[in-house]
Image 1: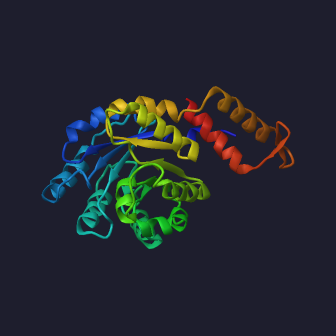
Image 2: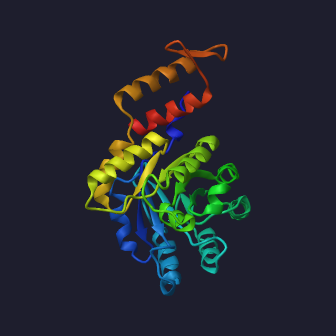
Image 3: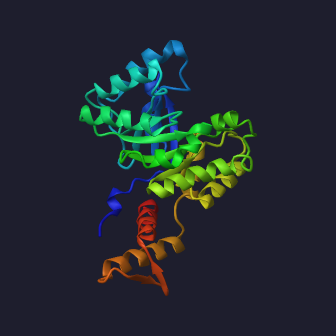
Length: 282
C-alpha cells in the first residue's frame, strides 16, 4: 500500500506578489510547502494586467524544488480581472500546479471553473478560501463540489469583517471549526490564516498549535522567518509516527476488512490520517 507518495505536505505557505516575479525563486527556497503568486490582494487595480502577464511569463521556465506546490491566487472568479486571470492561465503553456480561489461562496462557482479547466486539458488543483459568511454557510457543499479541490483555506481577516466580529482566536473559533469540519468531511486539507504580527513569534507559535489541535493541516505565513516554526509545529511527533506506522501495517496485513490496533477497531479515515502523518514526517 504505497499511497504516501501521493500526499502533498501543506504545513505552510507563503505569498509572493505577482508584480514582483524576481521574488519567486526566493519564495520557492524559503522552506514553505506551498508558494502562492498573488494576483489579488497584493496587487492594486492599476497593476492587475501587468501582474497577470508577469506571472504567466514567470511560469514558462520555472523549476520548483521537489515537494513544493506552486499556486496562483487569482481574483474573484466573478470579476473582470478574475475572468481574465483564468483565461490567461488556461491559455498558457506552463503554469502553477494549482489555483487559489478567493471569496468562493457557492458550488456553482467551483464547478463552472472546473469545467473550463477540463476543457482546456490543464492539470490544475483548486484551493478554496472560505472568507465570507455565505461561503462559510456553504463550506460543506463547496468542499465536496469537485475532485480538483485539495484544500480549504480560512480567510480570517475578511471573515471577521463580514461577520462583524473581532479577529482574535476566540471570536473566530466557530468559523475556523466549520472550515476544518468541511475539509475533513471531504478528505482534503484545511489551512489556517497567517499570523500577522512578525514581532510576536511566541504568539504565532501558540496560535499555530491551537490550529493544529483543532485539525488544521497547516498555516500561512507572511514572512520566511515564520516558516521553519510552522513546519515544525505541523510535523508529526515520534509518537504519532509510530502509531501511524502501526495503522498502515495493520491495514496491509488485514485479510477480512477488519483492522484492530492496540485493541481498537480502526476504520478507513484513520488510515488516511496515518498516511498523511507519514508523508508529513519526511
